[in-house]
Picture (cartoon, helix red, strand yellow):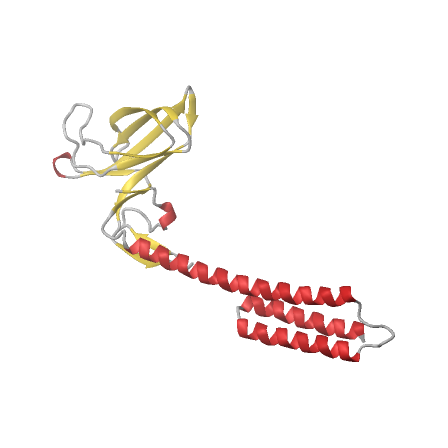
Length: 227
């Protein structure tokens, strides 16, 4: 009798595990009631000469409580995740119309030498950082040293002037950045400016910032600085 009822209780526990992945707390309660009914039935009909041991009953009760606790925890985590997703969407919409720095190497020159900002991201501090700007044909039009920079993100603005101090023609230019620590080259990420035009939801349910074609849509995690 004990072995047979043990199999039945195990079947109930397996069903509860399946229900926990589905997130139905009502069904979980019904399964828990069924388990308790089976346990009481087992106790009433057990062999007086071979009763269920206390350790066995305690083990079964511990299993049912553990599964029930996991279900409640999963439900709470689901609610927290929903709140986080809603917060990300609200944060994303607040960026519409704002400028951001994201991974990229483009700087734009407009009228009278007006330029878009660019940025540098370093994992570690560098002794010397050098910026090189080239035109569409790959020709260097400006090069300048930023000197030592700490780890993190820094933004800069090119004055739009060429090496001969004349204004650069309107258009798109490429920014290249090198960083060294002593004589050792370092990893560096170049950032370009983009304007957030809108927000759309990705297939993963996460908001994406529409940057108007300057850069591909990005997640909030890919934004390095808000300008």
